[in-house]
Length: 144
Image (tube, rainbow, N blue to C red; front, side, top):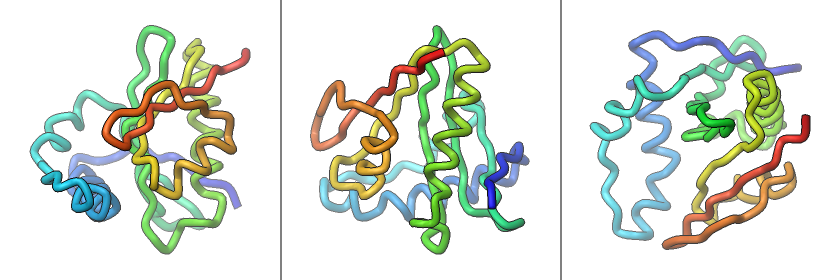
């Protein structure tokens, strides 16, 4: 079954913030960082935001920005019950297709290097371009 990206409503930003905070809690705690929900909520209007649906269920959210030929994935967050089912892979494929349609030549994202999603990104053709405080910045060249 394939995923569907659905536009968000205003009330979705709190759901997306909660999911992101919960998914990132361990990484933040390991580094002594404090999650600041207001920063997430302030950035919401600056990103394109979508619900990820799978089998008619809300599986997660994706947020990105596309400008100057680069599509930057700000968040790709899945609820725990929907992980390891190919949904993240499908979401990356959809984002790459969207990037291509917009004339973007690069996909970019950042990930904590111990995050299991890092392995997915590397398998899907992303390459490390920088590491800072155990955060990897990855990119993938989009071939048109």
